[in-house]
Image 1: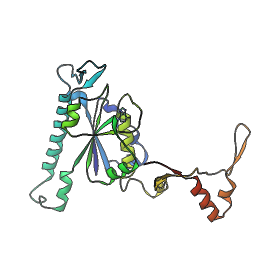
Image 2: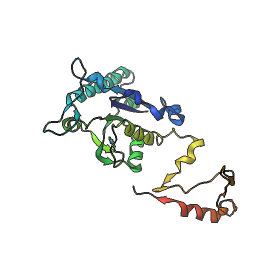
Image 3: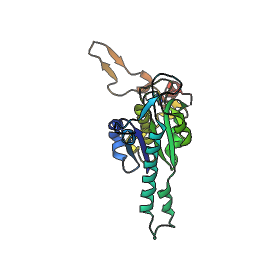
Image 4: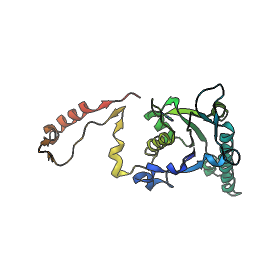
Length: 244
Ligand code: ADE
């Protein structure tokens, strides 16, 4: 089961959209998430997490020592869970693997490598858990990113106020590709992104839609013609290539 460890200043933002539908059903079976409140690792009485940028740039940065405390907490907890699960009887068993899962560390940032569908599928299919570091303000002290070897990943060429939404986008795209999450009923949706193509425009009942403002809009005739060859050609021509 893939576990997402999330470090954020807004833990209440999670599980967000992952608390519905197939995501809710599969949580705890195929995947799970553990949210860590960055504020708890803040410095001093005021639990300060950020500070001014050296060199005079505007804004505030998350301090590296705060990230360090959060990382120690997560690493220790994972190690403790592993030790608790390894007993005399299972120490050499094949399932031992699951107690020592790798952790892929991701810092969500608009400076990062652009996430795309092939990256999503690689992550969904690998055995490792994921740690998602959500920044706010102007970002995170660069030493922390380097020291803990975070991969810097962007969900698109635009700037969000914080990375919580980006983390949700990342998790949603990964979780839906984890084997077992999408069942038969939803498997059609799975087909909407194959061979770098997104699906053609699709239509359902009524075949003739009488709109409230007095229009009558039919589906393309070909789609209800019963001519399977023509329908297949029509569908193929409507598919759109997406650059990956
Ligand atoms: N944080 C702010 N903007 C972001 C983006 N585009 N991708 C990932 N994290 C972000």
